[in-house]
Length: 207
Image 1 (cartoon, rainbow, N blue to C red):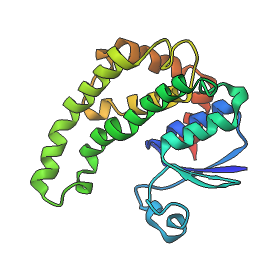
Image 2: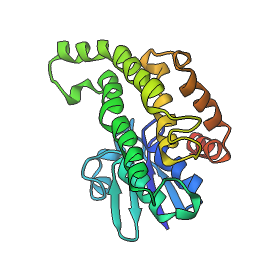
Image 3: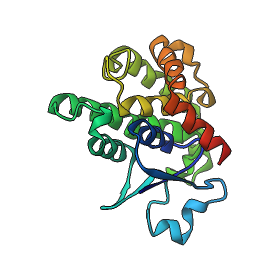
Image 4: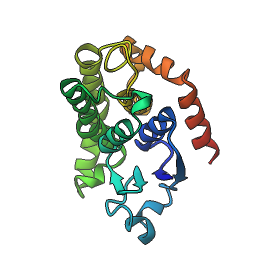
């Protein structure tokens, strides 16, 4: 059985949803991020980065959301969570997920975790001031150029949808109205209607 270490409100939600959508045999283990549980020695022994998600498999430990999502899709082919047999389409999905990871997530993190980039309080405050604009600009790109519809990759649901939903969850706290992006807003509502998403949200809230 796989083990997923996650935090409430964190990007690990995407991996949690993907595991549930895949019908995977897994155990979800909640980390108390506010108390710093992810920085304790026993967790650092699994993931030296001190972040979530961490997925423990029978082959070893995986970290980083795009890698975990790809692994889930590739090991649960029957769930059809990625266009695995089409190299170009799979690369497109990886490009989408990589943009969320390397650009959108970083813009969001500038709001609450600017200390990762600078020890200067003025710089940290300056980073916060750019969050709303950067997140809005990046979701504009997703809305108009990257999102194929009705799902991220087109007609078929994929792990990219779990990741987009996770990022869209952060828009409100970043001062961005999701209604600016009709396609993303519609996608968000349809995601919340999926049984797997509802189950994961309920599980994370009650854990």
